[in-house]
Length: 187
Image (cartoon, rainbow, N blue to C red; front, side, top):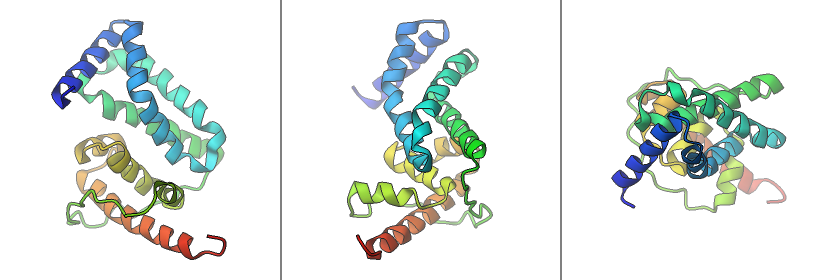
């Protein structure tokens, strides 16, 4: 299926779900379930026992809020926004440490390339758990989910300049975390 055909299919599923078509909603869950689960898993690395519950709560919120979604083409960033809200609610509930990043960094950060670090996926995944959540979420959304900068800005409720900054500094923090992890005893 071409990208435009896939997008039309997904929009049709959203519209059908909005009018109560359970089969269409089940298809949305099949399409986006793995992506939302992966995002939740990456963001809640320190609370593994809550991943399934938070993902279920996300889908319940999506189901309840779907009739209010005005633009079917915005389903993906809207769904990730709901997941993000649930994840941060879990951070607050468990009083998990949320290291904040400086969002006032200049927006003049150059557009990043989507190159990989040239290391194995397992190392990247463990390194992601060591960087601030704001940077982690932008890296996961951009490189694992391949979401555009504009849609990441919608998900995170920040400017595109902030998204670029978080990706830039997130890559740097991930690289440093991977280098530290590489040289620790037992690795």
